[in-house]
Image (cartoon, rainbow, N blue to C red; front, side):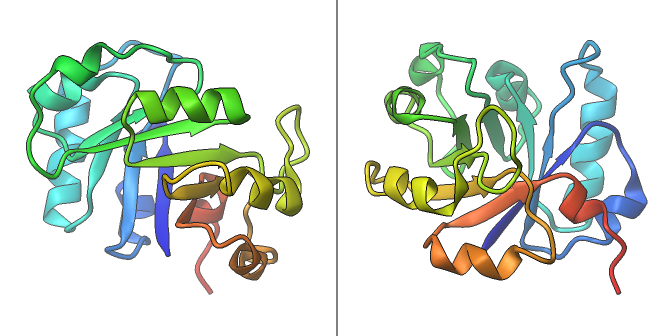
Length: 174
């Protein structure tokens, strides 16, 4: 099962705790993007043999030769389809409903992050609605929202491709 860890800042100790299969996604909408910081994270992830993506900036991901990009649900743009990307460039997108899933399919993403599976917020789906929505797309679906050690096994009920989060990955490993 693929694992995706959203980070807001560069913390080597948090990255060190992750296994090699965990893909790191830098997502910080609170401040301007610092290219030097992105390069530092990229180089550190490369040294630790982890894939590194940036959120919502495909031009920068291509320019800095990152492993890919994450397109949030509010981004409906399709300009990136005309860009030339390297062979294994990963494009991920998030959605909360069928309309946003269709938008991500038109954006030609490799996988769709569907939320929120466990976190009871305005986008709350729950397991059954998540499973129903998963039948409506041929793209692999990644569970997002409220995933913890306690409910991790429930993901097996969804047939999801993987899961993403923040707090799950920041918990102390026992």
